[in-house]
Length: 327
Image 1 (cartoon, helix red, strand yellow):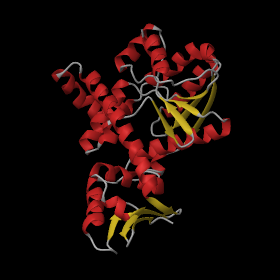
Image 2: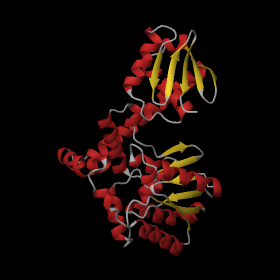
Image 3: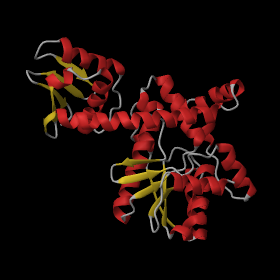
Image 4: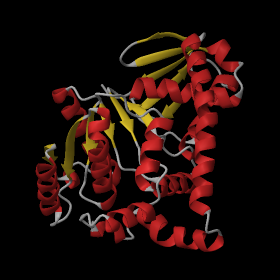
Protein backbone atom coordinates (compact mmCIF):
# COMPACT_ATOMS: atom_id res chain seq x y z
CA UNK A 1 0.00 0.00 0.00
CA UNK A 2 1.33 3.40 -0.98
CA UNK A 3 0.85 4.95 2.49
CA UNK A 4 2.96 2.16 4.01
CA UNK A 5 5.83 2.68 1.53
CA UNK A 6 5.65 6.43 2.15
CA UNK A 7 5.84 6.02 5.93
CA UNK A 8 8.57 3.39 5.71
CA UNK A 9 10.67 5.65 3.46
CA UNK A 10 10.37 8.47 6.00
CA UNK A 11 11.51 6.17 8.82
CA UNK A 12 14.19 4.39 6.77
CA UNK A 13 15.94 7.62 5.77
CA UNK A 14 14.93 9.62 8.88
CA UNK A 15 13.31 12.31 6.76
CA UNK A 16 11.04 13.73 9.47
CA UNK A 17 11.15 14.49 13.17
CA UNK A 18 8.16 15.24 15.44
CA UNK A 19 7.03 18.89 15.21
CA UNK A 20 8.91 19.47 11.96
CA UNK A 21 8.10 22.56 9.91
CA UNK A 22 7.93 21.48 6.27
CA UNK A 23 7.54 23.35 3.00
CA UNK A 24 5.74 21.22 0.40
CA UNK A 25 6.64 21.92 -3.21
CA UNK A 26 3.31 21.48 -5.03
CA UNK A 27 2.98 22.21 -8.74
CA UNK A 28 -0.53 20.81 -9.16
CA UNK A 29 0.52 17.68 -11.06
CA UNK A 30 -0.20 14.11 -9.91
CA UNK A 31 3.11 13.60 -8.07
CA UNK A 32 2.92 16.75 -5.97
CA UNK A 33 -0.79 16.28 -5.21
CA UNK A 34 0.03 12.78 -4.00
CA UNK A 35 2.77 14.28 -1.82
CA UNK A 36 0.40 16.87 -0.34
CA UNK A 37 -2.34 14.34 0.49
CA UNK A 38 0.10 11.84 1.99
CA UNK A 39 1.51 14.57 4.22
CA UNK A 40 -2.00 15.46 5.33
CA UNK A 41 -2.42 11.84 6.44
CA UNK A 42 0.66 11.98 8.73
CA UNK A 43 0.34 15.61 9.82
CA UNK A 44 -1.24 14.75 13.17
CA UNK A 45 1.02 11.73 13.82
CA UNK A 46 4.17 13.88 13.51
CA UNK A 47 2.59 17.13 14.78
CA UNK A 48 3.75 18.81 11.56
CA UNK A 49 3.42 22.40 10.48
CA UNK A 50 2.98 22.57 6.72
CA UNK A 51 3.17 25.33 4.13
CA UNK A 52 2.48 24.65 0.46
CA UNK A 53 4.84 26.54 -1.88
CA UNK A 54 4.03 26.94 -5.57
CA UNK A 55 6.16 28.59 -8.24
CA UNK A 56 4.44 29.73 -11.43
CA UNK A 57 6.89 29.62 -14.35
CA UNK A 58 4.46 31.50 -16.63
CA UNK A 59 5.37 29.31 -19.56
CA UNK A 60 1.86 28.10 -20.36
CA UNK A 61 -1.62 29.62 -20.54
CA UNK A 62 -2.87 27.07 -17.99
CA UNK A 63 -0.29 28.08 -15.38
CA UNK A 64 -2.52 30.54 -13.53
CA UNK A 65 -5.40 28.02 -13.48
CA UNK A 66 -3.05 25.44 -11.96
CA UNK A 67 -1.85 27.94 -9.35
CA UNK A 68 -5.45 28.70 -8.35
CA UNK A 69 -6.26 24.97 -8.31
CA UNK A 70 -3.48 24.28 -5.80
CA UNK A 71 -4.53 27.33 -3.78
CA UNK A 72 -8.12 25.99 -3.54
CA UNK A 73 -6.92 22.49 -2.55
CA UNK A 74 -4.79 23.99 0.22
CA UNK A 75 -7.64 26.20 1.42
CA UNK A 76 -9.95 23.18 1.66
CA UNK A 77 -7.25 21.24 3.56
CA UNK A 78 -6.42 24.11 5.90
CA UNK A 79 -2.81 24.40 4.67
CA UNK A 80 -1.12 27.77 4.22
CA UNK A 81 -0.35 28.55 0.57
CA UNK A 82 2.48 30.78 -0.70
CA UNK A 83 3.12 31.35 -4.39
CA UNK A 84 5.28 33.43 -6.67
CA UNK A 85 5.40 33.82 -10.43
CA UNK A 86 8.13 34.85 -12.85
CA UNK A 87 8.43 34.64 -16.61
CA UNK A 88 11.21 32.05 -16.85
CA UNK A 89 11.90 32.89 -20.51
CA UNK A 90 13.20 36.30 -19.40
CA UNK A 91 15.92 34.56 -17.36
CA UNK A 92 16.76 31.65 -19.67
CA UNK A 93 20.27 31.41 -21.08
CA UNK A 94 21.34 28.19 -22.77
CA UNK A 95 18.86 26.09 -20.76
CA UNK A 96 15.24 26.92 -20.06
CA UNK A 97 15.03 23.93 -17.70
CA UNK A 98 18.03 25.12 -15.65
CA UNK A 99 16.66 28.67 -15.45
CA UNK A 100 13.32 27.31 -14.21
CA UNK A 101 15.06 25.22 -11.55
CA UNK A 102 17.20 28.15 -10.38
CA UNK A 103 14.24 30.51 -10.05
CA UNK A 104 12.14 27.86 -8.32
CA UNK A 105 14.83 27.14 -5.72
CA UNK A 106 15.48 30.86 -5.19
CA UNK A 107 11.80 31.14 -4.34
CA UNK A 108 11.95 28.17 -1.96
CA UNK A 109 14.96 29.68 -0.19
CA UNK A 110 13.22 33.04 0.14
CA UNK A 111 10.12 31.47 1.68
CA UNK A 112 12.33 29.42 4.01
CA UNK A 113 14.04 32.58 5.26
CA UNK A 114 10.73 34.37 5.73
CA UNK A 115 8.94 31.54 7.54
CA UNK A 116 11.90 29.88 9.32
CA UNK A 117 10.83 26.54 7.79
CA UNK A 118 14.12 24.74 7.06
CA UNK A 119 12.83 21.54 5.41
CA UNK A 120 11.48 21.23 1.85
CA UNK A 121 9.63 18.13 0.60
CA UNK A 122 9.66 17.46 -3.15
CA UNK A 123 7.64 14.89 -5.07
CA UNK A 124 10.40 13.16 -7.03
CA UNK A 125 9.71 9.44 -7.38
CA UNK A 126 11.54 6.34 -8.59
CA UNK A 127 10.85 6.98 -12.30
CA UNK A 128 12.22 10.52 -11.95
CA UNK A 129 15.39 9.08 -10.44
CA UNK A 130 15.86 6.68 -13.36
CA UNK A 131 15.24 9.42 -15.94
CA UNK A 132 17.81 11.64 -14.20
CA UNK A 133 20.43 8.87 -14.20
CA UNK A 134 19.85 8.14 -17.91
CA UNK A 135 20.07 11.84 -18.82
CA UNK A 136 23.38 12.17 -17.02
CA UNK A 137 24.73 8.91 -18.44
CA UNK A 138 23.98 10.12 -21.98
CA UNK A 139 25.66 13.45 -21.23
CA UNK A 140 28.77 11.71 -19.92
CA UNK A 141 28.49 12.15 -16.17
CA UNK A 142 30.75 10.66 -13.52
CA UNK A 143 29.82 8.85 -10.30
CA UNK A 144 28.25 11.92 -8.74
CA UNK A 145 25.81 12.35 -11.62
CA UNK A 146 25.06 8.65 -11.90
CA UNK A 147 24.00 8.55 -8.26
CA UNK A 148 20.93 10.53 -9.35
CA UNK A 149 19.41 12.27 -6.35
CA UNK A 150 19.18 11.10 -2.77
CA UNK A 151 16.22 10.80 -0.36
CA UNK A 152 17.63 13.82 1.44
CA UNK A 153 20.20 16.46 0.65
CA UNK A 154 21.35 19.87 1.81
CA UNK A 155 20.73 22.84 -0.49
CA UNK A 156 22.24 25.90 1.17
CA UNK A 157 20.09 26.53 4.26
CA UNK A 158 17.40 24.02 3.21
CA UNK A 159 17.20 20.31 3.92
CA UNK A 160 15.48 18.79 0.88
CA UNK A 161 13.63 15.51 1.37
CA UNK A 162 12.06 13.17 -1.21
CA UNK A 163 9.67 10.80 0.59
CA UNK A 164 8.20 9.43 -2.69
CA UNK A 165 11.57 8.17 -3.95
CA UNK A 166 10.65 4.48 -3.52
CA UNK A 167 7.29 4.84 -5.29
CA UNK A 168 6.74 4.44 -9.02
CA UNK A 169 4.70 6.73 -11.23
CA UNK A 170 2.20 3.91 -11.77
CA UNK A 171 1.83 3.52 -7.99
CA UNK A 172 1.07 7.22 -7.64
CA UNK A 173 -1.47 7.38 -10.47
CA UNK A 174 -3.27 4.26 -9.22
CA UNK A 175 -3.50 5.68 -5.68
CA UNK A 176 -4.84 9.03 -6.88
CA UNK A 177 -7.46 7.26 -9.00
CA UNK A 178 -8.46 4.95 -6.14
CA UNK A 179 -8.88 7.91 -3.78
CA UNK A 180 -10.61 10.08 -6.43
CA UNK A 181 -8.03 12.88 -6.03
CA UNK A 182 -7.97 15.42 -8.85
CA UNK A 183 -4.79 16.89 -10.30
CA UNK A 184 -3.57 18.95 -13.25
CA UNK A 185 -1.78 17.62 -16.32
CA UNK A 186 1.07 19.70 -17.70
CA UNK A 187 0.91 19.22 -21.47
CA UNK A 188 4.54 20.37 -21.82
CA UNK A 189 5.51 17.00 -20.29
CA UNK A 190 4.54 15.47 -23.65
CA UNK A 191 6.59 17.86 -25.81
CA UNK A 192 9.66 16.11 -27.18
CA UNK A 193 11.86 19.21 -27.48
CA UNK A 194 12.74 18.76 -23.81
CA UNK A 195 15.53 16.23 -23.23
CA UNK A 196 13.88 14.64 -20.17
CA UNK A 197 10.65 14.17 -22.11
CA UNK A 198 12.47 12.31 -24.89
CA UNK A 199 13.96 9.99 -22.26
CA UNK A 200 10.51 9.42 -20.76
CA UNK A 201 8.51 9.09 -23.98
CA UNK A 202 10.98 7.32 -26.27
CA UNK A 203 13.84 5.64 -24.39
CA UNK A 204 12.01 4.33 -21.31
CA UNK A 205 9.35 2.34 -23.25
CA UNK A 206 12.14 0.68 -25.26
CA UNK A 207 14.13 -0.18 -22.13
CA UNK A 208 11.02 -1.62 -20.48
CA UNK A 209 10.55 -3.87 -23.51
CA UNK A 210 14.10 -5.14 -23.06
CA UNK A 211 13.73 -5.53 -19.30
CA UNK A 212 10.40 -4.98 -17.48
CA UNK A 213 12.37 -4.47 -14.23
CA UNK A 214 14.54 -1.69 -15.66
CA UNK A 215 13.22 1.03 -13.33
CA UNK A 216 13.93 -1.03 -10.22
CA UNK A 217 17.34 -2.15 -11.53
CA UNK A 218 18.58 1.33 -12.45
CA UNK A 219 17.25 2.88 -9.24
CA UNK A 220 19.05 0.19 -7.20
CA UNK A 221 22.25 0.84 -9.14
CA UNK A 222 21.90 4.58 -8.50
CA UNK A 223 21.50 4.00 -4.75
CA UNK A 224 24.62 1.78 -4.67
CA UNK A 225 26.60 4.39 -6.61
CA UNK A 226 25.30 7.04 -4.21
CA UNK A 227 26.64 5.09 -1.22
CA UNK A 228 30.06 4.65 -2.86
CA UNK A 229 30.25 8.25 -3.99
CA UNK A 230 29.25 9.53 -0.55
CA UNK A 231 32.29 7.77 0.95
CA UNK A 232 34.62 9.04 -1.79
CA UNK A 233 33.26 12.59 -1.47
CA UNK A 234 33.63 12.70 2.32
CA UNK A 235 37.23 11.46 2.04
CA UNK A 236 37.98 13.89 -0.79
CA UNK A 237 36.57 16.80 1.19
CA UNK A 238 38.95 16.09 4.07
CA UNK A 239 41.83 15.93 1.58
CA UNK A 240 40.68 19.25 0.09
CA UNK A 241 40.75 20.88 3.53
CA UNK A 242 44.29 19.59 4.10
CA UNK A 243 45.46 20.98 0.72
CA UNK A 244 43.81 24.39 0.92
CA UNK A 245 46.38 26.93 2.10
CA UNK A 246 44.42 30.16 1.71
CA UNK A 247 41.36 31.58 0.03
CA UNK A 248 39.45 34.79 -0.61
CA UNK A 249 36.13 35.58 -2.24
CA UNK A 250 37.84 35.46 -5.65
CA UNK A 251 40.71 32.96 -5.30
CA UNK A 252 41.58 29.63 -3.73
CA UNK A 253 45.08 28.10 -3.32
CA UNK A 254 45.91 24.37 -3.14
CA UNK A 255 49.25 22.88 -2.09
CA UNK A 256 50.88 21.88 -5.36
CA UNK A 257 53.22 19.15 -4.05
CA UNK A 258 50.43 17.29 -2.23
CA UNK A 259 48.08 17.75 -5.19
CA UNK A 260 50.60 16.05 -7.51
CA UNK A 261 50.67 12.93 -5.35
CA UNK A 262 46.92 12.31 -5.28
CA UNK A 263 45.34 9.35 -7.11
CA UNK A 264 43.46 10.68 -10.14
CA UNK A 265 40.05 9.80 -8.69
CA UNK A 266 40.71 11.83 -5.53
CA UNK A 267 42.39 14.61 -7.55
CA UNK A 268 39.26 14.92 -9.67
CA UNK A 269 36.99 15.20 -6.66
CA UNK A 270 39.27 17.65 -4.84
CA UNK A 271 39.28 19.93 -7.91
CA UNK A 272 35.49 19.72 -8.19
CA UNK A 273 35.10 20.54 -4.50
CA UNK A 274 37.47 23.52 -4.86
CA UNK A 275 35.53 24.89 -7.83
CA UNK A 276 32.23 24.33 -6.03
CA UNK A 277 33.53 26.23 -2.99
CA UNK A 278 34.61 29.14 -5.17
CA UNK A 279 31.90 29.25 -7.83
CA UNK A 280 28.95 27.57 -6.14
CA UNK A 281 28.61 24.78 -8.72
CA UNK A 282 30.57 22.68 -11.21
CA UNK A 283 28.15 23.33 -14.06
CA UNK A 284 29.95 23.30 -17.45
CA UNK A 285 33.03 21.64 -15.94
CA UNK A 286 33.89 18.62 -18.10
CA UNK A 287 36.22 15.62 -17.93
CA UNK A 288 38.42 17.42 -20.48
CA UNK A 289 38.89 20.30 -18.00
CA UNK A 290 39.92 17.85 -15.27
CA UNK A 291 42.41 16.17 -17.62
CA UNK A 292 43.92 19.54 -18.51
CA UNK A 293 44.27 20.44 -14.85
CA UNK A 294 45.94 17.10 -14.10
CA UNK A 295 48.41 17.75 -16.91
CA UNK A 296 48.96 21.31 -15.68
CA UNK A 297 49.81 20.11 -12.17
CA UNK A 298 52.00 17.16 -13.24
CA UNK A 299 53.80 18.34 -16.38
CA UNK A 300 53.54 22.00 -17.26
CA UNK A 301 55.96 24.71 -16.09
CA UNK A 302 55.22 27.20 -13.33
CA UNK A 303 53.18 30.12 -14.67
CA UNK A 304 51.08 27.92 -17.00
CA UNK A 305 47.35 28.59 -17.14
CA UNK A 306 44.21 26.57 -17.87
CA UNK A 307 40.97 28.36 -18.73
CA UNK A 308 37.87 26.97 -17.02
CA UNK A 309 34.21 28.05 -17.22
CA UNK A 310 34.22 31.52 -15.56
CA UNK A 311 37.48 30.55 -13.80
CA UNK A 312 41.22 30.51 -14.37
CA UNK A 313 43.68 27.98 -12.92
CA UNK A 314 47.34 29.00 -12.67
CA UNK A 315 50.29 26.85 -11.65
CA UNK A 316 52.49 28.81 -9.26
CA UNK A 317 55.72 27.78 -7.56
CA UNK A 318 54.09 26.09 -4.58
CA UNK A 319 50.38 26.33 -5.30
CA UNK A 320 47.62 25.77 -7.80
CA UNK A 321 45.62 29.00 -7.78
CA UNK A 322 42.00 28.85 -8.94
CA UNK A 323 40.58 32.31 -9.52
CA UNK A 324 37.10 33.54 -10.37
CA UNK A 325 36.81 35.72 -13.47
CA UNK A 326 33.48 37.21 -12.35
CA UNK A 327 33.83 40.25 -10.11
